Length: 336
Image (cartoon, rainbow, N blue to C red; front, top):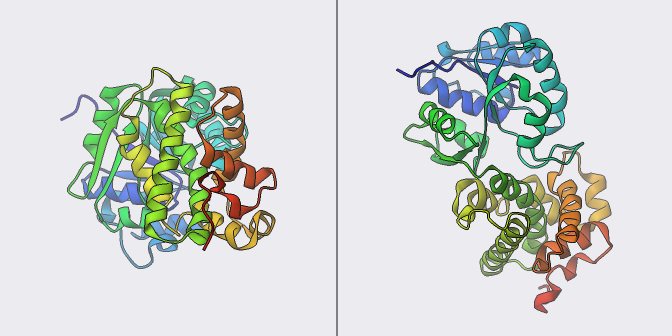
């Protein structure tokens, strides 16, 4: 028995939050979810989240419930899993902080990349703005499509935060035979890789059309990952040299940059066929890599980073009018 039993609540009723809730209840931990959609709340209370997972039931429906009453939700938990889209984090966390007053809870963050308004990493943004209400903070990162997590397919991720003891405790609640959580405490590197992988995914979406083939994909994926590491070392010279070998870094990069399911990868493929302007006009979902590329451009200039030809060309295509077919002109390769 742990020193103080964790009582989990999931802020949001989306796919990934529901998938993680499913892991917890499978491990016999009670979970309450907070949402604003009456339809989804009723559905979850019946044992389903059919919007995302069809007719497949939660693994242990008796242990999961949902509510749209934020006060009741916060009174029922001591650890919240923040599982809303990045654009909704500011509004929801402001509401949570207001309701909590002086009270503190643990927070497990699922938002990756950069906060849309401030362009800060989410760990920095959340702790600076809502730290008075947070006892312990960590982020869950790694290659993890929600549908596969929900279906019980083998998934490996990192829980990343400054407090290694808290990371280990979180891991102990989630770990089972098909979901493995490895604690890690290099939050800066994990968040940087998590953000920049979306930029690289756009580039690899472009090259998947212009330079099809597994050889080219493997080579360019390796090159792009190396360039992200170059950015990391320029920003954090004393950072971990093994940062790239974690689920939250290379694992996340590989999945996001290799699957048409990835919005950023699909956006890049559209650019290859139709150009940036048309791809943007037809895009209805948020493309995190597009906004992150603007921030990356500033980082490259501010730190005078020279060894990022692939990432720099992605930026030039997105914002400076460079033709998409020149994406790897530094290799003197020609599209098929």
